[in-house]
Length: 306
Image (cartoon, rainbow, N blue to C red; front, top):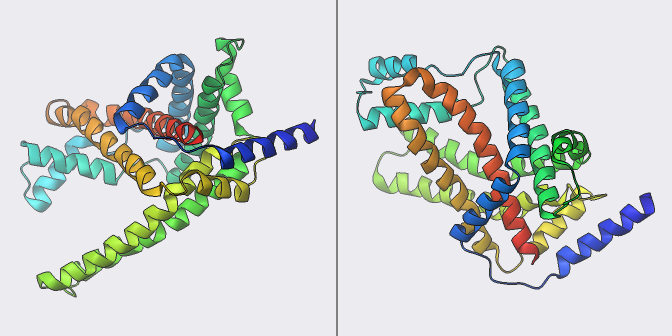
């Protein structure tokens, strides 16, 4: 059995390396096909998200919805004299919710618990997506949720190693952001030309991070294949984006922009007219965004294989 799995892994890796290039679909085509995939697997995906949400709420959030929108409005109004009754004020509260996401909870280790649970849920989501792409018509829906959490966990270590590497690859961007903010706040960069210089450094460091993760992000999905090591996954991911890294990167960057717009359209009216419900909806929306992120990126990964 192990020999068969190893042979299967080598065959899969060779297929990844030797697939002919084709025109990648546009972001709108990817969005439409992602929606179709999620709709077909809606019940299993819903079950995965419900389990993840309940465990996250009990273990990490501590039965708390997170940031209180009403108190955030009061703080912004008193500290920065922001009028929280208009669009700009609501947008500021929404930005504060995004900035504080994952940092709230009943203990100092809540962020660590949330991260672990997000990894577990991600593996379950990826297993569900791969099961859908393999079109296993004989599988019974009532067992798929259990299989997603049981069978989807076996590539945990390779997945975590690549996730750690992606975090390291993001360090140049984070260093650039920290350097720019420090230069502006400490009056190191005062005139426009000085600020422009630090902005150029920020853009160059960000470009380096984006260049690196544009291939590594697909190694997350390759690492979930049978007997796939992190090194093999990273090499295969690099081959996938070879000669079309910029095209792939544009489709990756579309995702956070689209998610921000969608979440803003949902959250801003709630912040303005139903602040008590806004935090709970934001928590539920974050679960949906996790599924959308993996579905879109996995869909893009599948297109790169063709």
